[in-house]
Length: 344
Image (cartoon, rainbow, N blue to C red; front, side):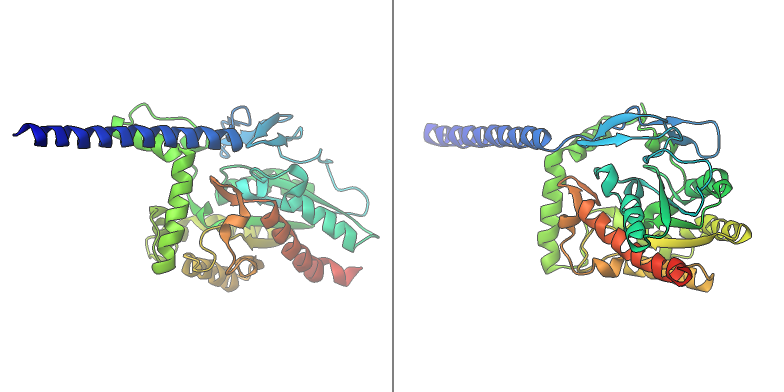
């Protein structure tokens, strides 16, 4: 190889290396900036393993900061004010069950939809007192919500039970995930991929690239999460068909205790214009209708809107305060008109 070509090749390689180094420095800088601006989600100290069927409970009387938001649990281990043992004279008790959305991940305690529901119902009914308990726990599924209702809520004789249901709540209990433990058997490649996926920069890039691609191909989704959810609802062997047992048990138990039950189907904050879960959502609605289970679908109140305006943060698609306000507004109107307005 002649010297001029060698010199040219060296120059190209040198420029590529320099470009790569500068790109890495830029990405590291962006990542550090994002981590400075977006508080981390640190669940340490919030929950503990149990020896019963619930498997995980939030610790009582905990005060931590989660994603930059203060979180405090009461003596019963729920994110709410102290509960009275039984409803006070003339008090209407509503218990709201659910997962991290109902809990209000990265939402101020008084801005969660159960807290807003309590405030709004009391404003509509000045001659009455409503108490709404937030029994949402991060990571809970329908099975755990059922156990909370059976062992904790129904003995307090609530006037109404609301289950905030997310489409992924059919999944079986995953103790490892809920306790944030890591397996030591992960190989090097999986560890590297998990570290890359945990980067704030990765989250934002995936979101932006996905949004751009869906403008040309609306049904495109990079994550297998969408397909996995839809398969489990829409396939004959999907997990939903066995896990809805706990929906049946919840409904039956409420009927036996003369307690009213409402299922609130909470939307995923993902591509609300071309919502990829419409078919799964319909499976739920058809199930509730055929089993005479009262329900309200909140997706129509978000349809066609930009999902990012409802994200808790640029790296967290949990419903934010704006979304919780819509949840509360819809539920307030629904339960007030159906269950409480006629007896005023």
